[in-house]
Image 1 (tube, rainbow, N blue to C red):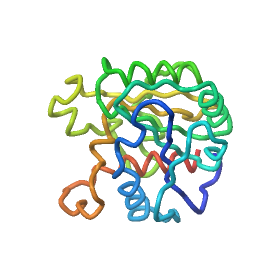
Image 2: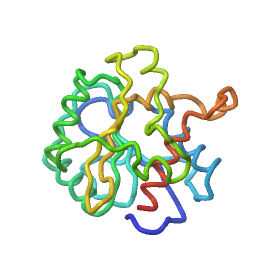
Image 3: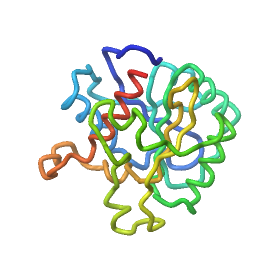
Length: 208
């Protein structure tokens, strides 16, 4: 994992034993469509679901994890996640509640810190924001933030854990899981496709 751009990409959703890991079932197909639509990356037409406790996770340079409910990793899940990050994988975690006082945020950040290390703010000048599309102000806001959903905050930065100078865990309180939860055919109704930042996450994972 890591290094030069791979020729094939498969979107991987992480299953974990606690919580509701499958709370955003439309997101994989939507981001698969965006990667195929905007880049020259060969992308598998369907994604996979891989248990966090499984070494099969090591096959995928990017893994997506979300949910609403409390998160408690097993010892095996923690060990596998730590090894995944050590090998160069990128875990993209999105809080489907958009709520820093919510149970997902509190428990998931505790588990990530326990398994991999402490989270810190990602500067909005980070390479993540111009590795494909350019986002001059950092992570794009979501309609759920702007409409006062969740904690009524617009989160100006994402959080991360780094390994060897690259992002190993990328954590969002912005609720991209709700923002990207629509059928790809509906992109034509958007003046600006709001899944473009997801393309950056994929490209970063494949090239760093």
